[in-house]
Image (cartoon, rainbow, N blue to C red; front, side, top):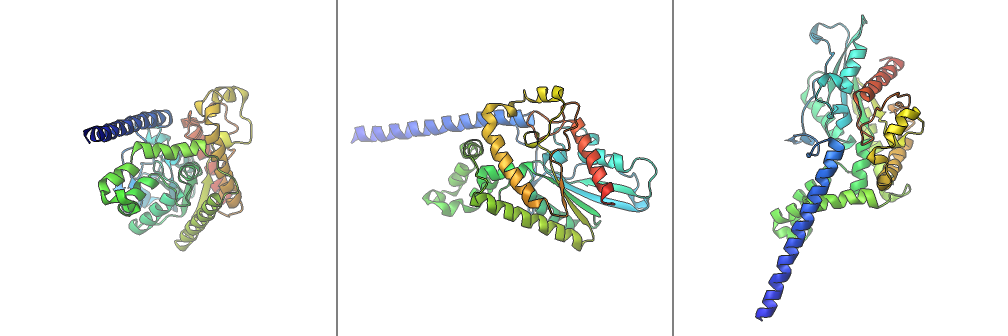
Length: 348
């Protein structure tokens, strides 16, 4: 009996040690990924709980807006939503965000109207969380917009690839675990333990491995449901904007490895050395392309859809960060210039 007890205790001990080792390794891997993507050990920035959007950092200041908007004649208000590229979390300079660059272009010189731009971009937000954020903003802000923009594409692809659900968003499995863990299994009787398991680094890395290992089929029912739901979401936002007398535009963001054009050879030579372009990330790129193109194809004929897939092809210096998604100052300025052209073309 003592031998059996020692054997059981030994197995339990080594099982615990193994789990701890796996968790530590997962933590180290995820930390290295954060350094690669975000340039630091944290995933994104410090945020606070928000009842509408789950988490939120808050409005980022926009430079080049009118100094006295109340006194400005024919003031047009633009609300800009998006993820970390719209927020421009990779720069600490508020003057170098897409929103600030756009405000500088639109408010340059003597014009019959002026523009007040609000940057509601939030790190890791996709269209689902942006829609909830828009709802919150419409409820709580007395000043109504003339134009609502979403700058999307990347986070739609990333979080669907990790979860394969049409309701994918950052932290999906962690939040689901907190709500459902007590009834998902017998382990749920110990609610804190169950929630900890589903919120662990090991569980998180399993989701990220799905993104890098399991290929997504272009005709899979999961992708079809996701595209359907995303289309309905954007149609809803367009409808809601109309109710408030505003226009809605969806800017489908440029991504390095979904471009179908050739940049200058000297630029491509530099970009080909980015880690994301190496063979080990081929599955990530392919899954991303499948989702990105499926969404773009479905949305292409929508009146609010603006395709920015290839707008950075004329770059004469690197416009993307090493992850192929976030942008250098030069890239953000190029995006802002193209946005201003689109707004002028649409008579805004």
